[in-house]
Length: 196
Image (cartoon, rainbow, N blue to C red):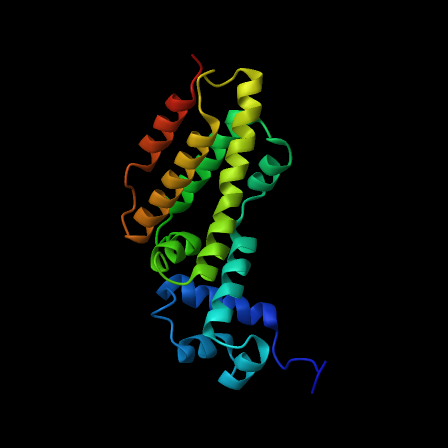
């Protein structure tokens, strides 16, 4: 019946779906695994979102809400603390990657899994990764204006580089390597940003 309340908590079910997709990826997450984790039947899933693909897109959006550090929002708002916030953000990424049992990043995994596939899934994942890029770019523009990074720094290229490094760290984390030179990478970034 239209407008009736669901017999399950959608946010709890979606959080459970995020965990399954994050652990197994899209292709290796069966509907049975997802429904079992969410505590709902297939018919409830179909009535709620439609299908596995729609659930995955909703899970990607939910994941981004769950993992976006407040620092990114501050950086997007006003470029908070210039290059210091960029370094703090990259240290945060390295720390997440080094956590025992780190599964990497669902967004990065999704871009890799769907590289030549579903354009809509890629758009959702890449739009969320773009928050990271825009936050870094805005903070670097502030830093350049304040003279705390080298005057020749190419802000756009450096922001793109930070996204690539972030994704590389997350893929290394997913591989199960506890430390793939993460701290050394952050030191290289610091030197790259350094003043003239």
